[in-house]
Length: 74
Ligand SMILES: [Zn+2]
Image 1 (cartoon, rainbow, N blue to C red):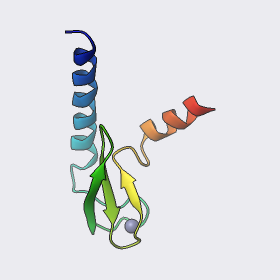
Image 2: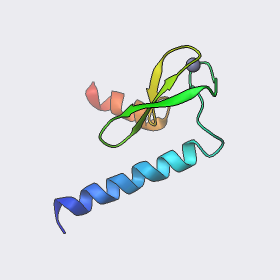
Image 3: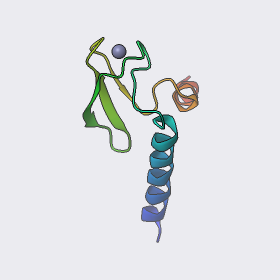
Image 4: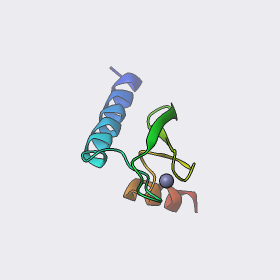
């Protein structure tokens, strides 16, 4: 129960994030349209395509997790 355990817990966190974030349905974080389709996925996060403004986003877009990821890169 070594690296696998870490992966599972991270996957659970990702699933939890997705549940909370999309509780009221998936919508575009940019134009707030609800015309979004699943558009492939990253290893851990679902990716979406907005059919309204034609932009892609994922579960982390616009969340505190995105900002923390940016902070780490600096
Ligand atoms: Zn959009």
